[in-house]
Image (cartoon, rainbow, N blue to C red; front, side, top):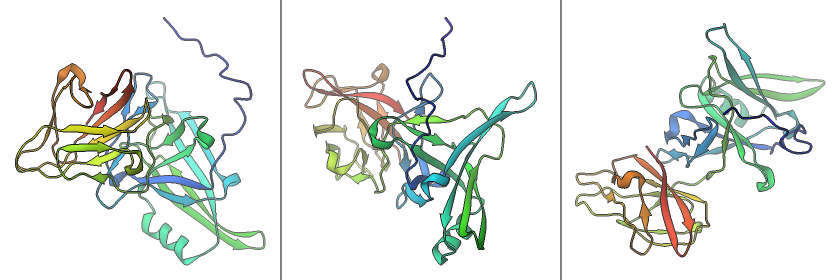
Length: 270
């Protein structure tokens, strides 16, 4: 059955609010990406980063920010390219250093999601990042740097929608196979390197229904294992009851489901 494209809501055509600090990440810093849902545009799970890296902020004057895409290509190769552009004020040492350091590097940009009323939008992907270029002027009309983040190849990425975590801190490092999930620690947890294998168990959680927590493997000679465990303090339900082995930088995303008790249900794994 085909799906109608209906009017979404009143005033859906009004501009998406832009925060002055756009959220960015370098593609090279990301070790695991959220999975893409069957609709092709919804991201499931959280981004996981290399140690010492995370999302960061790029200040761009809010009204100057623009997120655009345009389709093109020959009849056998139709696609689109995403572009995000904004102005950073002032020829400061910090601004010029940032441009020099990151010119030509691949980014993702996250925008929207103001007030928690809508999902955040993501431009850029692992295979088709947004690449930074810049232009500047310092004249009678102003002193600005125009930052342009644009994909370089026609692709089928389009804009993605994300309601996962945007954290500027590293994942919570846990001491052993017993994991306590706490909102104050954030939704991402790094397991340690293991010399003796053990089963990952969850001892407590205060996360809300529908939230997703991310567990990152620590590897080692005998990595920890997460098993399908429908009983226990916090039951874990894995797809097809298939074990997840906590190899270094492997990732599993678990959705919090609250019924008569709290369950953790696999959303995706990498």
